[in-house]
Length: 335
Image 1 (tube, helix red, strand yellow):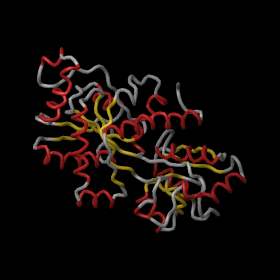
Image 2 (tube, rainbow, N blue to C red):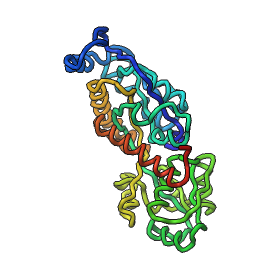
Image 3 (cartoon, rainbow, N blue to C red):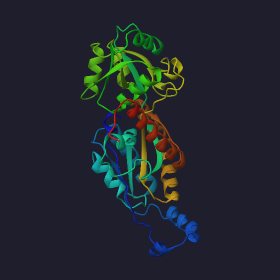
Image 4 (cartoon, rainbow, N blue to C red):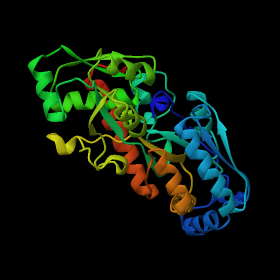
């Protein structure tokens, strides 16, 4: 999740890629026939899943799991292409809206317009949501000797010493920054952001008590807790993490409105036919239900999520507004 925050994509004006040229002049009267054809004929060639991050990232791993199984389901080659950065997502946005170019990205996609004034697309309007595939619960970690066993006690400490406690992040506008900044705003506490070059440095800062809070993926957090290097006081997600059911959520800890998911999802260029989106989503859902896939992802601290294109589209648009609002409230942003 951390490496996804600066990566976003573009969608421009696309050309319909359905295999009947006369559709270019078709009226709305023929829309049902077009939809039926789009779904029934798809896919009949190679499908590319673009990952706008480097190989080895969580996003890349998820894409490769899906590509492998979707190749079997569709009887067509499904490949993963790593195209890190804005250039990668821009290439997806410029692709024909026919379902043959997809993108798997993180919720970092939602804040691109805030941190990049030259972003040549709208993160919500220029993409069609397909489905979420996973969330990675974030653990709120604190130094092992911090006199706070839970979020309520942490907030009390912060209010007793305004401006004296710090929270670390893997960088401005990273997943860890967004989660902590939302906590700061929701709890109305004055804690200072200390950006780091990456998650390892941020974690070390907490272990040394240079920073008093960091949001970290649950699997690594559990390892550090078992080694006595940190404490875990809560998880960011609406529900408790299956990996540590004894740890409460932030919303259970006195902040009922708090909720922060680091999600990963599949998107397509805007204008992709709805029947194609529905088919891709349904087939991805089938892959995620395969027991061996569910078990493999669970061991990596990943919670599987599946929803319809309409539902995820609403999530995407809502998170663009919400996450952009978090940044602007913190005084971060270019517009």
